[in-house]
Image 1 (cartoon, rainbow, N blue to C red):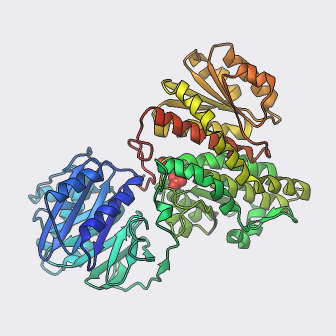
Image 2: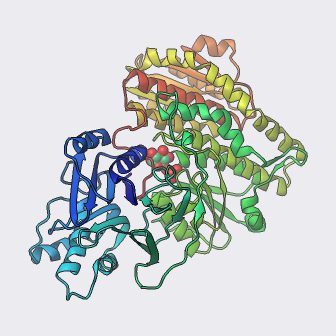
Image 3: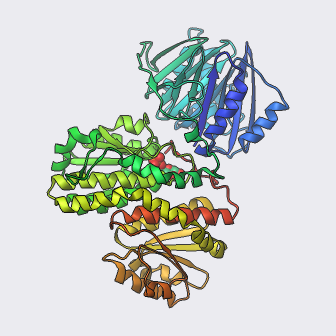
Length: 614
Ligand code: G6P
């Protein structure tokens, strides 16, 4: 989703901003732009399309300055074109602004400004904000300076924003504010950056301040101060050191971030497990939630809420927690949960799962649950993210930065955390030492499993080569592998644009079976567990209708070999660890199918890595 990067300091801002925009590309965008302030001269260039197109335009159309703001836009109001791209300028051309988020009352403000003669160039809600600032600054009673005009405008808007703005009347000054959209403030040696996440900042400084909702920053030359949007009171914030390396956010020898991140699973799952397993006691150690164990044990219900891939991890978590901890778990899309009249009280635990920790709907679900008295726990990948700070406690997945839009290593790390959580509660509630140890032993082998799966990439490539022209794909699984089927289908849709559906295997008879013909690949997730004989019958049903059968199992046998067109075998493991193995195969399958179809794998059309608006 939209990305902001801004720079003020001694260096030339242009290459810094362009590089920053490239680092933000993974968030998803459709246009980009940059504005610079050179003394009192403000100039800007904006372009629909890729950052490289913007960069080409800048080199042939030199703009310069001592500070600047830049943006990648993911369209919400108004189509992706040059005019709607950010930065937006006010009617005088002296104020420039970049904005992430949505101004909900933009229409009413726009009408008022239009009635005062303001002519809008774009169709965006963001331009309304810059024009409002301008109106208050230039056409007010003269009492407001630029900074206070920005604050006053922000007090009038309803919605979510992360903004950075500058004005040619105030050379070498940037102002920034946050309400509901992430903004990180990098504090270097005589240089400062604002960005939507830390990735554009780390080359310049490791010292950052994560801005909270309602905070406002002004940087003038080498000085800065932070206050509240609604008051003049100075807010004291502590610097946080970011622990992120450049290598982690670059794709190195891999053609795509997604492939790199699939391979990262050789260590990201064990990084998530590190120091958290106790084989002797058959349990896990999750320091982040220790203080809350009594509340978790006495909870009458657990809600898991999330979006996208994280929601699928939640569905797997339901199986695990209900199996081991014997407490009812309801898994809810955050976008639905936030608006429905769910039963939430002081005996409720809300577990919010989010890779980015910034998803707007998930955040809203947390706020609602907190207000209703629930204990909120976060399972996040990004340290310092809003969800990790807003929840009462949590468990970090240590998957490392995930740049590919299609989530891979973050998903398997989320499942890993949920296994440990179920085990922790389960052991406290009477699950036997034997069962605890059994699960832990399988978890300890996870690196070997992933290495083995990656050795089988060529076989998965063969499947992709023979099926990439299909228009539809069906994924079927039972029990804890039904969410794996959903996730496999989502991965495929996201990056290859093949229509795919995940279904519980037995439900196929109630609809999807009508779609099956010789052109329809059907992926069965069929481990040899207590569901095996049942799923074998489902495979027979597809075979009888001529579908192309791709089976993922942990043990091949004659029946599977004779029924299936392709069998992909993962190492034998625990029933509840198998979803990790099979998901990795499905990630590779989706990746290889997208390669065969020539898709833009790391930046699939219309998708955003982190959905920070509703
Ligand atoms: C977007 C991403 C998905 C992700 C979902 C939830 O749709 O493209 O990959 O699963 O958001 O994101 P979160 O950061 O909350 O896990």
